Image (cartoon, rainbow, N blue to C red; front, side, top):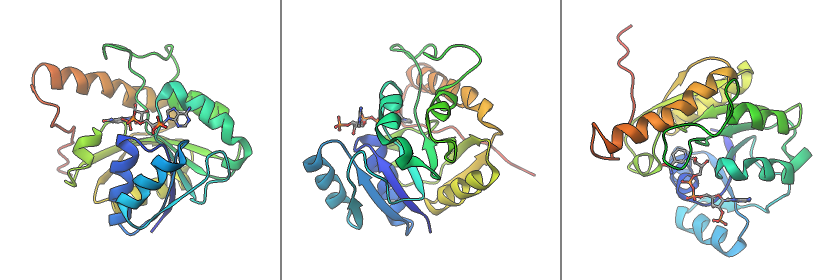
Length: 206
Ligand SMILES: NC(=O)c1ccc[n+]([C@@H]2O[C@H](COP(=O)([O-])OP(=O)(O)OC[C@H]3O[C@@H](n4cnc5c(N)ncnc54)[C@H](OP(=O)(O)O)[C@@H]3O)[C@@H](O)[C@H]2O)c1
């Protein structure tokens, strides 16, 4: 069981929170609009409401905001994120989902890692699953990347608690390639698959 705070009250926040509550985790929802946050937490049943900008209760903090807002959110919390395991779920693709907004040689996760307190550890995860697919409750593969082994173990156990399979792809430098999966999934949905009701998985046969 993990203790998790989710910053954001949109599609991904709701889908992750629902699975986290169902998985027996302690869940706190933090939004910038108190009324909307209360509504989302009430709909989940069992989630508490946190206060934006103050120390999140969870050991794990999920940033469920657009990448364009992530830097502002991280700086708003500042030292309140000290010692936290921060899960960056953002997709960093451009408006037509054919490229990434981050320059070559870095990633959204690495840029976020530069902005959090030194004692916090960023793990990239969940950006390769669609929110509406996550909300369907089916088992899925969740790729993750990060530099701190303990934080990765924490995130891996949390992913498992959601009924999902964690798949470690390496250090945080691999986040760029996870972020590259965003345009790949969008292109697949729009072209070959012809549906957004899809998920990327790995056939592991040992
Ligand atoms: N949707 C997907 O299928 C999917 C899949 C994988 C990853 N992701 C990633 O997940 C993240 C969230 O996506 P989403 O689909 O859940 O988006 P969404 O439904 O639009 O929700 C975004 C949330 O971020 C909040 N927010 C935006 N700017 C903020 C700020 N400056 N301070 C505080 N809160 C702020 C919004 O607050 P308000 O409600 O107050 O506007 C909203 O609750 C994004 O990074 C996205 O790339 C999405």
